[in-house]
Image (tube, rainbow, N blue to C red):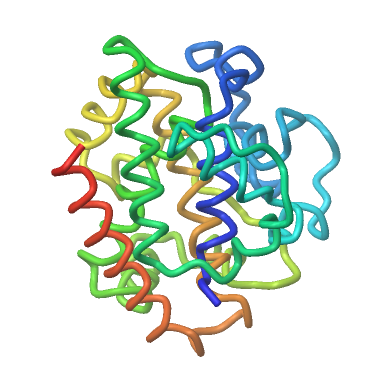
Length: 244
């Protein structure tokens, strides 16, 4: 079963929802949270636009694949308008190549929709996902990335991301430039039509949740699987992006 399958599928569903831009618009300001789990931007995407609700680890920490409605996602990507059917439980078993195609398809569809900002927070998070995964890969995979965070002074936060019990102690958005290249932040902001502040906030929330999903046992026991999945997703996303 894919470690990131549920998270990516849920993000893609939100990004492709025509109502996402209205419910969760970008450039409307953010409410920075260093603690509390998913945070303002990611919470609005995974929590159905209800990020101000009390954080419920049982509801958001591990997305239930049986509630994803993969048929709607694929219908949006393929333009088929499939509607709801019995496919909703398949998301957790999707191959990593399909996940990369989903990300590429979502961003390609968004860019065709408009050249001046093409969606809400779901589209922003979808655009940030490859950036987060490539950062982990560039820094030596999961353990290497966690080691770098430790050396940079984010060890306590990173430990909370791995924990199956603790809420994510998210990075302060003001510190995101210490982790990610500012040129990449600017590029994503221009691509989705978002403010750089909102991109930093999104990264400060998404990186912890990606680490959370890649360490379901609270340790590095799944590191080999995690690194393989990241490589396959990025490879497929790159191919999809070139062909879009």
